[in-house]
Length: 385
Image: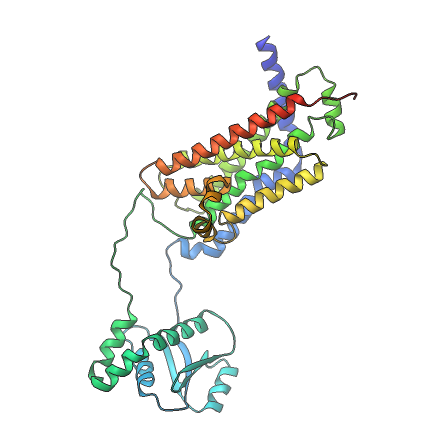
């Protein structure tokens, strides 16, 4: 009896796996789309991820004196005379010439020397932002500079040099044989989204197994095979396909793009598989619990995937930290946040406590969804087919 059930399960599993691979749209979203999105992320952050800082050229700027401000003029001249590459290449001129330089792109911006210095730029960009940052820093420290210029002008250069430097009072250490990079959060969230894409497969498995959702479900309901065997075989096939997609994504990110996921790749891959199991369980729950058409159920699955991925940091890396400050409970039940946080913990912490907590929560949520879905499925019945 058990052997016959196993053979039936295996046959249904192979048929379902074959039918899934014949669905080109599903195969594309599962296997190809995460790789494409990962490529775009890498193109956007690649130089930063490789630890290569963007090289900044000296910024051409015009200086127009409106009212005398010796302290500000002295600061500008001292910054221009930097021992290394100067931040600014200054041209002291009148306003009409400065505006002409700005229009002809010979100057990035115009510093106005006044009682309260101000800045004019023609467009927004990184160089303009640096000029504004410099001016804001001066305005914050202007009283200090003015006092030094008045009482000890010979020490002004040293003071400017000291205040313009960034001092580090800590040392960078490697916790789990990996280096921290804030841009890796996007790739953690990408893997989480790849796992959550299984939710649509779970919905589809229910749609093709229940008579009230599709014509294929009607035919399968009339078959002598038990409904539980059909659903489990469909879910197993979907899990295999999604596992292949996750493996390809890990291979592409670590081997081709050479991103650093630490020395616990096995546990990282297991995290993704756990996330895939949860997503399938969530898809089954959506397919069974919501009494609506398949199109609406697929829409709910898509919203579920994108909303959770967004709050896990897929579009904004700081989103998960922001949620952690205002509503930490949401991060404890957001599956995408749990997956990405587990990958982060494996990469950064020698202890597995945080990883185990996240995986425990995800496992409990998966079991709860499976239990509720099983109860609803057992109570479903039809007057006729």
